Image (cartoon, rainbow over all chains, first blue to last red):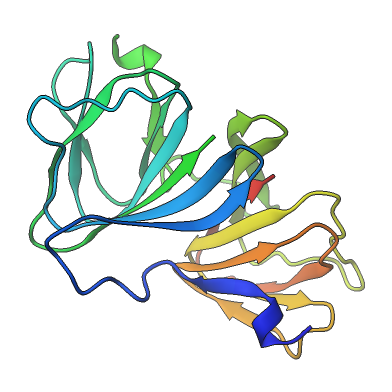
Length: 111
Length: 111
C-alpha cells in the first residue's frame, strides 16, 4: 500500500476560495448514507425555507459559529466547536445564521 | 418539541475522568453502522495487535495527537486536529501512539 491508496486528508485543509456560496463536499459514502463537509461563509437558509428530509442527519460544528432553528423548539440553537445535533427524518430545521467572521466548518452524516 | 426531545451535545464535553483506559461512546446508530467518540489518554494498541475489521471505518482526530500504523504503509501516520483516514474493511491498522499530554478525541464512523 502506498500513499495514493490510503484515503486520508485534513478536514480543515483546502478551504474553498469562493466565500459567496456554501460548499458541500462528500468525503465518504456508505450504504444509503454519506459523509459530507460543509463550509459556510455567513450563509443561512433562505427566509421561510425549512429542511424537511426523508433521511436522518447528524451534524457537528468543527469550527466557526452557527444558529439553527428547529420547528417547535423554542428559540435558535447556537452551535460552536464540538456542538452536534441529530435530526431524525422530517425534523424540520433551518440554518438561521452563520458567522461572517470566519468559515464555519460542519461535518454532516446523512443516513 | 422541548429540549429533552432533541438529541444534541458537545463532543468535547463530559470527558471521562479515568485516564487509565480508552473510552468508547456510541453517539448514534444508523443501519448497520454507528458513530462513536473515542477518548484516549496515551493508550495505544497492544504490541503486535492489529485491527482487522469486517466493516469499514472512517476516523477523524478532533483534538490531541496520535500515530497510526497501516499494514504495508511505510512508517507511522501522524494525526492531529482535523486529520482523517478511511479504512476499508480488512485494512489492517493499529494505534501506535497517542499523546499522554492531553486527551486525544476521535470521531469514528463504523459502516
